[in-house]
Figure 1 (cartoon, helix red, strand yellow):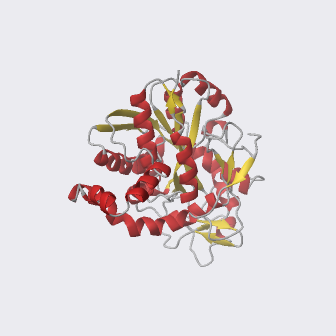
Figure 2 (cartoon, rainbow, N blue to C red):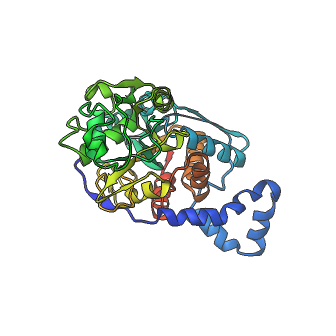
Figure 3 (cartoon, helix red, strand yellow):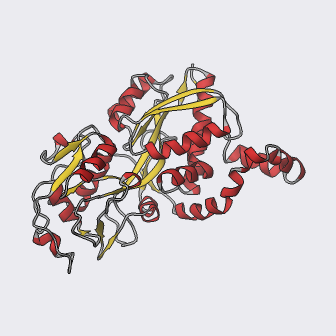
Length: 392
């Protein structure tokens, strides 16, 4: 996408500490239902009103009805946290979400089959144009990056106790089918003292259209372009082929668990007890963590080519610092700027405000190990959410 960009501001992980410090307050509603009202009346009525209006305008609005979403399976665990948290605040509201994969979610949303989509990739140009037909008015849909998580590289090698160090070139070689045995010299070169088995490598990839595949192949394309020559792809058949295909994030994890010698890529929150490789960055290697994954977003750029409310970003896959995990999945919620009725507008605004709030991000992190978005990005996105309205 040829468009102007601007640098995102750092700060995501200061939020983690704030969320931890303030987490006790978020659960007080059920035990002390009048506490917030009392505090507002007796202590700082103007301050609370200002904060509610400028930071989380829809969070204080109690809504009812059913909001339907579908898409990213990587968001599944985080979505469970969001559903529980939001429905706890809005007992007459229901959030339905079908984790059918990013591509399927975008297709369903664009056909009018859901109110929002979860997607590990932002809308493509042609999809954005299609959203102008799906949504009311002519502004189309926007991308809100609400879920940030490392993509882990899990493997099944019971005889290896150490965490494997894999360079970008080795990772790309494995998934391009040019490195086919675990005792390959290229793997041994960065794993001194590790006895690697003489065992065929079984690379497991997503068989469905997948934003996780798009993020992972984007990483290989940027970090090892001489080895991974297939570019950024959502459908594996558009790339090298070979290996074993599996449906969804859970399918990839299950396939890796089932086959000794297997290796895959999946949202880190869902790999269970499988070990995962440390990835080469600069002169070192870094293991996945929410903190390390979040740092890559600090160095990434926002694409502002469509309109002022869109938050698609271009993730930096080649950082220099070895405390940055470069295979971060930035997953979006895709929503219309204009809907046909006020009830849908109220539900979308309330849910998206909660999801992007400090509490919503903490709830997702607790459920899925995701990285919270920074306060600066959250504040900017709230301006976009506030712009959602009923169209003529």
